[in-house]
Image (cartoon, rainbow, N blue to C red):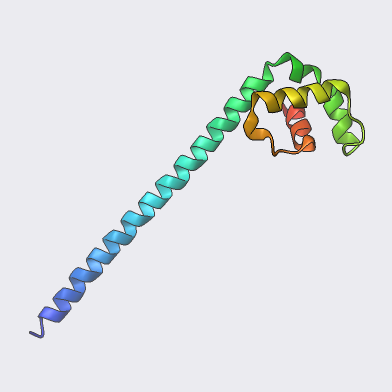
Length: 106
């Protein structure tokens, strides 16, 4: 009976280690998949807007808007912001300054 306890403890330790490693792998896979999906979405958004004539024409207005911390709002920038939010409804909560900076980065 005295050899049964150490053997049981060793088996339980092996099972716990295996379960912990499996949990780590699953968690890591989930994080990496989430980052990959986010990266692809960002890439899709920027590539779809990069060739958009309305967005491209608003670059000068976006530069003025960013440089003035939002005080100067040009008509082309307003049109581009409206166009972006209509085309990509998921960006409705993003602020005007952030979108103007994104326009400048394209």
